[in-house]
Image (cartoon, rainbow, N blue to C red):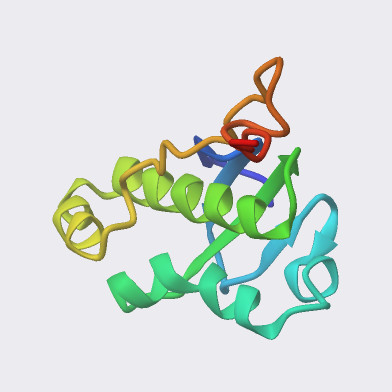
Length: 130
């Protein structure tokens, strides 16, 4: 993973992914482990990780990723956004393809905070008339 790389940042929920993209053979390293080892518990998450490469129909890039915060689902979302941003920076002509595949937008949904006097963010105590 030496040489020139393209850097990008992706975020989703509480997860943050720092992505370094280089020319290579399609190897994805997440937190110094292969992606298949890091996300070993779910095969569907590994499929989702390949979405930016499937959208551009090219897998000749290696990705070195540092991800922190959130759970595995949020981390995958952050990594996908980071890879998509890095691909669009590396090759400007891919931007339209990635945008059509809905991979360049950040999902703004966050967990809502708990308010005082309530059981959760919105749940209230049951109303009793008598």
